[in-house]
Amino acid sequence: MHAIVECVPNISEGRDLDKIHRIADTVKSVPGVKLLDVDPNADYNRCVITYAGEPAACVEATFRLTKAAYEEIDMTAHHGSHPRSGAVDVAPFVPVSGIQMAECAELARQYGRRVGDELGIPVYLYEAAASRPERQNLAKVRKGEYEALADKLKDPEWQPDFGPAKFVPKFGCVITGARFFLVAYNVNLQTDNLDVAQDIAFHVREMGWPLVDRHGEEVISAAGKRVFHPGPLLSVKGMGVYLDEDKFCQISMNLTNYLLTAPHIAFEQVKYEAAVRGVEINGSEVVGLIPLQAVLLATEYYIWREKRTRPGSERHAVILAHDCLGLSAYRPFDPKKKIIEYTLQD
Image (cartoon, rainbow, N blue to C red; front, top):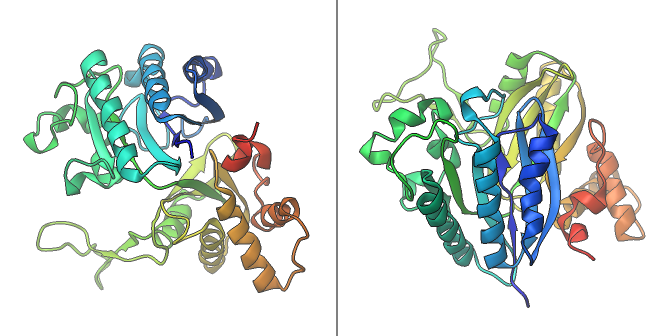
């Protein structure tokens, strides 16, 4: 079996489509890689670019994309609602078939070393490629975001894994690694109240919500950190986001292991928490690509819960999941373009 790797760089540009396509098109110049999806979001001012192919080719394509982002994006003028630390904020390598996670971690190191050496950009490793346990979690590596990076690079505990410990204002830094297939999944709320959206996000994500005492003050541990009540959804990171252009809020989630928490479980939990607060939902959306298995898990769930007739084909099974999750309520969901197995078919 040929080794196939998926790469999902998130760049800090979601509004200038000409810039986005100039950056994404660099992937097309590398033999052995197929550009699968370009998914910009103006409110986040961020674009998720997805491609897959041979391991060495994916490393080359990701380097070329990073070089183009360096030329096109100026982080000193960047503003958006999504956390970020650099022009290429994250660049994960994901095993699809014929390759192990450890091998993808080595690909991330090859890419990071080249970015540090040739472009002079600080690079941090995370998830399966992390150089130390405290760097496994993306949120911890990204803490403080771009605005705190200059001071972070002066801290001996936060020396980059590759490249100079020097702040590059135009770019920031790159965070790269290897991980399981992540599903970027948003549920749409029929409210423009960001405080309510954030409260819902806190009560569904694994990290949970800050504990408060009887006086309404946040509980602080002996180490001086906030204490959190664990949330119900394993392997889920989430936050409330207000979409200024469309005037509503989303619960923006990263499902870092859809086998532990599949999209339909996240959808139903958000629906429940929203209802408790008197808020209705309006479908959901997948950002980037999603594995077919994650979609079909939703089909099986709704067949069971709603006692539906089992679809007679895979195509109709996908349609059932699409309709139950409202995947086209905000932006169209085309299975041929959004389900990774379908995008890889010739």
